[in-house]
Amino acid sequence: MYPQARYAEDILTSAFRILEERIRTKITASPASHGVDLVQEAFHPKTGKLTFGKTEAEREGLFHLFRGSILFLRNPPAHRFIDEYSEFEIFEMVCLVNLLLNILEKSKLK
Image 1 (cartoon, one colour):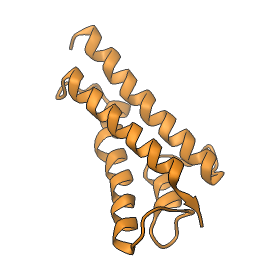
Image 2: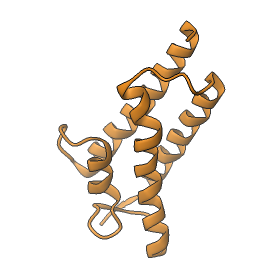
Image 3: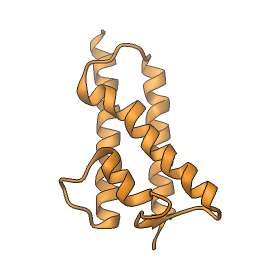
Image 4: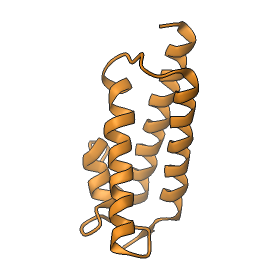
């Protein structure tokens, strides 16, 4: 892997760290809460502290979007070196994190 690819991977990891910190702050979660457990605490359609969306199906979809992003995009570079994505694809993932941050900002405490 080229050094610039490693840098892009670090940017992705940092973007997800920012997302998790903002979720923790919004729901006043413990610093020990992270990953899918944090998403569960924040966005679970029935038990989560946050709500966004007009229907139950939308809220469930949002929960799965956040959960899937953590599992599929955040976890690999957080736990191992990845080489399956180009720098541009990592940029696109950071754009998704930005969208999640915007949705988080619009979410309301229950």
